[in-house]
Length: 327
Image (cartoon, rainbow, N blue to C red; front, side, top):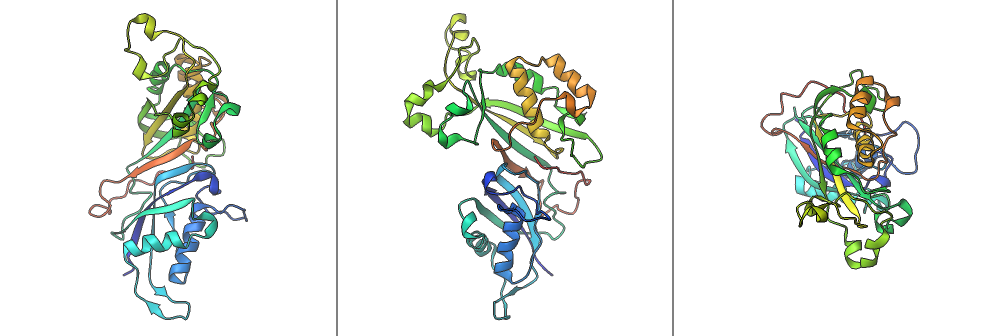
C-alpha cells in the first residue's frame, strides 16, 4: 500500500502565483506546482499534491498543510529505490524546489498518516493573520516592511473594530464579503473568532529610532491596549504621533473566496470612522458584494495554522465537503 504523507510548510506569498496550479504558463510558479516538481525529481514520476488552503498570489503561510501518496521511488537509471524516511523527505523536498524558490518555501515537518486522512476535508479550522500599520502612509513604510503590512493613514479605533467584529462571529450568510468570482454555491460560513491585538514593532524600528517619527497625524485614540490604563483620564486620551502596529486574526473551518480580506477591509473602515457598526450590519444584511469596501491587499495576510482533531488516529471521519476558497 502506498503511504500517505502529510507536510507542514511555510512560504513567502509574493514569490509564487498563489497556491493552485494554473492551466496557463506564468513566470512565478504556484506553490502546488513547485512541490509537485520537487517530488517528481525525488521519485521519478508525477505525484499530485493536495493543499488544505488555496491561498491567493501574495498571501504567505507559516503553517500550510498538504498531503500526497508515494507508490515508488525510481532512480534516473530506472532502478527501484527504498522510500525516504519522513525526515529525509523533508530535506529532499526543500533541496529540489529549484534554486529560484530555495529562499521562498520550506517544508517544516513530514509525517506518514492514515491513508484516509485528507488535508482539506479533515481540517477543523484555519487561522489567518492580517498585519496593519496605522498612522503611516505607504511611501513612509521602511523598505523592509513593504508588502508585509497594510498601511493606513490615521490611527484606528481598535475598540470600535473589536465591537464590529462581533457581527461576523457565528454562522452567517457572507455574500457581501466574498469575491464576485467566488465559485462556492453556498455563502454560509461560520467564524469561530476574530482577535485584534497589538504586535511588537519590527526590528527595523528598534535599530532605526528615527523611523518611529514617520507617523503622519495626531489622534485622541490610544496607540494600543498597553496605554489604556496608564495614569489618569488625561493620559488615556492624550494626543500621540506614534505608530500603531496590530494584527487581525480570524479563525474558521472554511472561508469564501477573499472573505478574510474583505472582512478586514470592512473592519478597517470602521476603525477609520467611515463605516459605523450599524452600517456594517446593514452591509451584511444586503448580501451584495458591491455594498462592502474593496478587498484589502493580499501581501499582509498570512495563513498561520490549519488544525485537525487527530489525523493519525481519527482521519476516517472527514468533515462535510465545504468549499475552501482562496484568500
